[in-house]
Image (cartoon, rainbow, N blue to C red; front, side, top):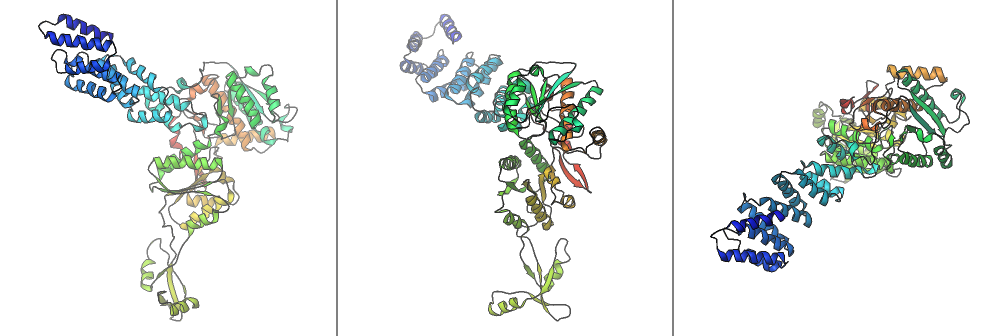
Length: 623
């Protein structure tokens, strides 16, 4: 503004031969403006708006006077008109500034963003646009910023503000799909949006605290301990992983701590000498000890890994907390991505059990497939009271009676099944008394009995639904769902959980015939050499058949040890690009912007062999 006033003074000094009355009117209008008499100054500047000498300046100050009076529309209209009438005016940048400023001040962010960019371009200073955006948009909620980013997709600063907002939401509520979109488009380093500053700390040997409910006095001979099998199996797997890391010059030290499943015992662990010097904590498994370690981890900047949970609440708001497995929401996202990729038929049904885990899984899945253009024709909770009726609906049929000629024609068509039976006496009696009830009666081949030909089509037409998601961990519901879909003999796909592979009521042959897709985050190739070698070592060393927990423990240390030696104590710095890292017996790991594993194998049986069908969705970013 000072520059503008100075330019006016210079202009006035250089004018010669122009109207003395116009000069006097302009100076008077300017005096009124400087004294804050905006109503009078607005009228005076309006009278000069057509002046060849003072017209542009008069209209500019007319607009400011109107703005100072609260007439934002008159001001904006005048400034915009000035841009049209005098596109090459040497004070155009001042007009752009006021249009941007007034837009932001009034909450018309579209105007502010549009003219803010033009103003920055006019003065050749991008920082001017940034100052506006930071001053007026930094406090906007994420939902409003998201709309602005959609309207101004090429504004990087807006995108960074939105990313900052999204990343500050509690972990279990974050929109990781949107976060990923922003990171990938603008190549943001997500580490710059973390709530903590992570230094690079490299060591020759890393210390790992294993904080689990061991519930016994000594760990000297793990092979003799039979109690608490889950934890012991996991610990044995960890020890084997430490051996293998040492063999490839990636040594780690394992320090076990017994939480005894108690909060007090866990608090005592955190007070032990040297515990703050740990580079990583694996565990705990139970809520109260986990609460203690989470607070300790956050306060002392020590990473933790939970090797067994898929609950995003475990991560909570602790930036140092990680899940070795995918969260339930991540599993739903990856299942939806596959369903979108492989289903041409856009119609879907979703069934889910009435609990937080399955209902949340179903909701995330529904949101994603609908965003991709699919239509969910039935979205229904399933329980003991309605399960039979719901599943019977999938397989419900009715009689469609045929004449002999119709039956002969239809029976030769592929996929059509014509049946016949002797007509019943009750049907003959009904036809005799009810003329509206007519059956196309035929005779059998020997002309001895009256028969009817018929089909039993489904009430729900074959192939009318492309796929069904069954978010259930019930052996009974899953088995009945599979039977209902198999009875339809159509192309409907079914998606479920990897847990189904452990159900006694399910037949692998049924899963094979239907091509059921199962999200199975802990898939292992039982025929692979790594699996076979590790299995034999566990049997030889610990004289026990391996359980899933042996492999969970092994993978936790094997993955964390390699990542710390590769990227330092704060290994997440090296994971934020989303690269895929192979597991030893599990598929692998990829984190990107998340703190839970984003690798979710979806498996199907093919010729009696379980195969991963979505590997191309995560292996393309392999390190």
